[in-house]
Amino acid sequence: MKITEVSGKFGVSPDTLRYYERIGLIPRVNRNPSGIREYTEEDCKWVEFVKCMRDVGLPIEALTEYVRLFQQGDETIDARKKLLAEQRNQLQTRMDEMKKTLDRLDIKITRYEETIFEKERMLRIPAE
Image (cartoon, rainbow, N blue to C red; front, side, top):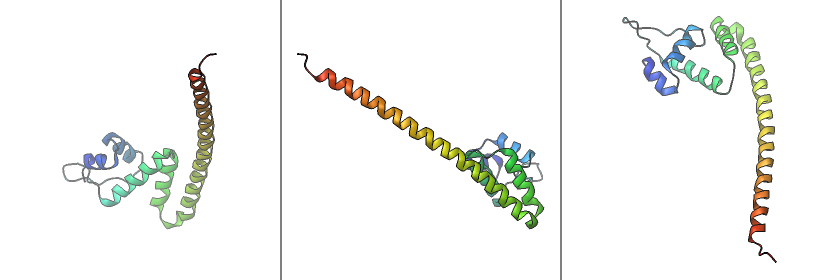
């Protein structure tokens, strides 16, 4: 696949794909004789993985480290698992904080709705 096809498939700009490759976030993509990137299915799996991890907020540094470890081979399995577990814990903490914020917003919205309902009810009661 060409870069524009991969870009469209994953909703990532061509510039972002080039950047990810340049910093080692995705392995180096092979080029055809004209110098045009030719993404393989394996390359696309990396793009999908990185996009998924970035979408939930994992830092580029952690993902770059993961790719670096992956490229070193099976002896880094434990280190990769530890890195992913640490990132998962950080994500869980952020999700817990977001849940608290969401609950607080729901309470505030309910209070506003109750206040508006009460004011509207008062408007409907005929004056004595």
